[in-house]
Image (spheres, rainbow, N blue to C red):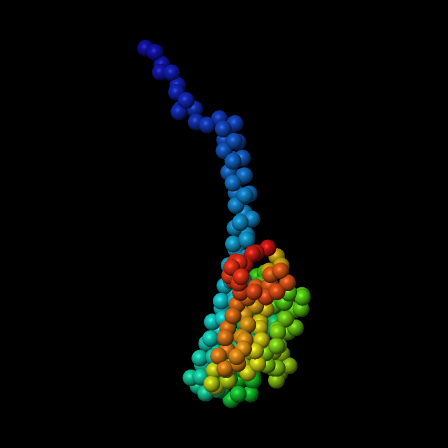
Length: 202
């Protein structure tokens, strides 16, 4: 009785075939990693400005609803292990400070790799453009008055390690307190789609 001839399927893959497949997989992964990193840091920046925008709207609505001040402020890191954050609160006694009886409307930390920094490299307190003076000598704050207007226009600015800079600006006219998200590109702050161009990312 003859033994059946072993077919190719019974041998599996050769070492050369496995190495070729692994090399192809490695090439595909290495091509995809930069795109994945780009998408990841874009999402961090976009997510953060969206959070700040929501905090601004919450503070403005609360100011109108409660006939008091709504405040949004940045709280820079004070040392290792202390994460920087953005906070919005209802300033019921209009003293410009967060008291024990003032409700916190929103509070969230900056994600890793995102910092309070402007396009000129100014950090934390110095990165804030205009807004109202903090009576406690902290960074300037966005203060919405009881009619929903912004006390002083300004912007909070954030950056990532790749040189991307974004801002959430509350602009003129004061009465409407228009909130706009912009990115620093080609030497100026622009909204997405300005002059028919989408933002580019480093």
